[in-house]
Length: 361
Image (tube, rainbow, N blue to C red; front, top):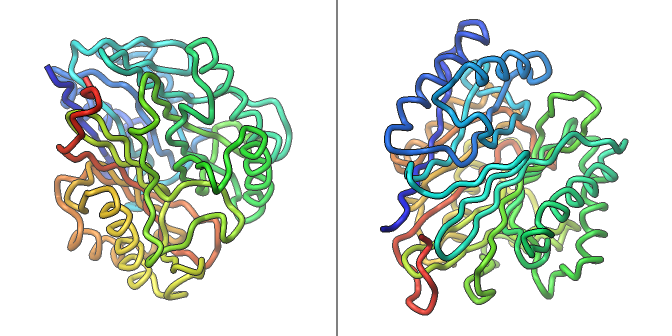
């Protein structure tokens, strides 16, 4: 039987203390778990350093959750003024899920999907911490026969004070990828690099990772839309715009953090958040089209705002162009260039695969 996937996005009602808002979100999540189990949970918190211990206590009391479920937290305040939001990935309750410290393995008949969230870092500086994050991923994958170059499909990189710390992160990633044979002529990894804080104030970089084991390299397609947006290496960064993974029964598309950019790497519509939102959706739509998908296939999206005061304007565009069925969050998160006022990353699932590949289940 095919695995049924569920993508969840929940934002608390604003105006109460953190414990009350977190309890609301957890209650809503519990209601979604009938017949399902969580693979990973990612919490977006308005004050992650002070709120994380409270959240840990509430999760410890939630006996309806697997005690070792993979969970991650990032300091990104919900744009509606609430203190907490949650995105989650669920599967059928009888799907084999193996849980280890800092990682979850979705043990399917044909593949293993590995979700990772690195432990506490020890290095100082965003560049060394970026290397340490990738080293943790490589250590976790090695016993499974996995490597960074062959098996990591998606990363979410959160950078504290991105205006000052992103440049060193970019250099460290570029150098590491070159050492591992990842170049513009081979491939990079779909990724989001966005403002976000870890609970530990000294931690400048935090990364979540998704890897796939057991696949044929021919199943991977790197998405491009050269008439709409440039390859990332044009302006010195090293990630793929998007990745499509084709199975026998479906396809998964991971759209990297996408902003209002043109084919030459320039910011489009400086200072106009409404026009920037339209352009980023045009760019996402073009990337999806390269993978035989449309906006209506989006199952999950996170929208990042430099200024939460723009939330209503951005929401008007999103609600007009995206399907109501897309699980969606909007949070505060500055993009890697100050001129970009809004960014979005997303996941799409299409029902078309290719018969030469094994089904996802």
